[in-house]
Length: 104
Length: 518
Image 1 (cartoon, rainbow over the protein chains, first blue to last red):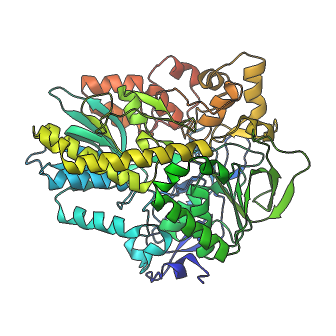
Image 2: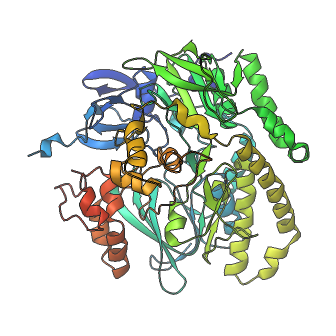
Image 3: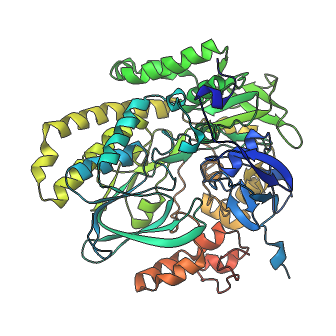
């Protein structure tokens, strides 16, 4: 019986590369979304909400709910479940709407 | 394929799942020029979602039912000259002059990058599928609570699990498929928690007998669950999630026939994730915005009303698959072929094509499977008692963080009777997801219980669109869409300008990056 998803489908991926979440290294595979790479590393939250500051991560997994919004390489409001992970991506936990720099 | 950029395609198919793929290859093989638009980089839709080639999966079929039907569709697609437009997020379908439709899309993995696109075609097939219906419960916003379909999607394409010990809960046949996939992929599934009972299916023995493929599918999942020692608890629901930063356990309670939790029946189950969902909702915004007629399905969702050959009430717009009512991949493929044939018959002026023996056969299969879909929807329709598992501090709207207490206040104290009034008073349904996650719940609460009624709102923009894209449209039609859609743009991007947008005003401020968020 398979112990991992990769074992179940007989995955033979290319060697993993590194992305970071708030500076912490996370291994990712070519073909994985940012959210899938974070889940595979046991990370479930990468956003805090605008009102309550509560942690959120991927929920619907298909780009419909916008709960998985993250700041990717400085750009906020990217749907982590749709954006493919690329070598060196710097993911940062998005606080609120992610545009604190525009506040006056 | 059109020989110049200005020449329209014969057919634009929106959605490359079983329905869209089937419609596209059928029309293309009959001689039509076809553009196939889809948000994903790969065809397959949600049902046949699969790992990217770089992940090197040698057994993708291990996560699928009926994989060979998909590989055959792919073979036909590769042999065709269909223009596959991957990474296209369609935000509107509009009518142009001369019987031509304009399909507007933003592009990129999440629609955030690159250029906007307008594809013109003489006919449109809407095969946009469905998304999962959610009903809120205490602490369902905690990380580790994920959609059942979401867990399935992340597993199928990303080979990732939300946890090692995953409770699967909600209602509907998808739960069994999700639980057996998770277990096969190495997760422990301490319980499948189904709010309905399966006995309701038994009231329709003739329908079951006429759909042996569905019984076989259920038996496959049932056997897999037995093999993995997964227990299915019917007439039960998760009524509380425990944990501070992430899921640590859930409380499962028995439900009475109205889905009201039975007092004192709560049992705690340790887990590190919960995959939850209450069936699927047809994704039909593109069609309802154009004015297509709808119908109410047996589980209270809204689907497109279609004629015998899959055409909507708006001439020139066809639909197939879940958009006409949730019924599964095989039904979707049949309807796609029917629509593809009907479109070919219309555009090539060959009405006899639509009266062939093959069409009769497809109609027969479709009707039989639609009856089963109705039985399935009725068996899993939400009972009105679900609202009893809400506490006042339960978030109902995940995006705007609107609690059940505030929704009830809008209803009980301020007199709201429908989802739109609740939205105006509380912002529930006004966030990024445009009410997709909370819409069913808010509508049900506003209606004072009963079966979940469909939200009757039109969303002029089906996905968030940067203001710059609308501004660049330039044409009078584009300006009209822009004005009508201002609310949705602003809402989707989270700008707090509710008063202005409710009047339909176009916000005049855009940030330097040309995006409408603030």
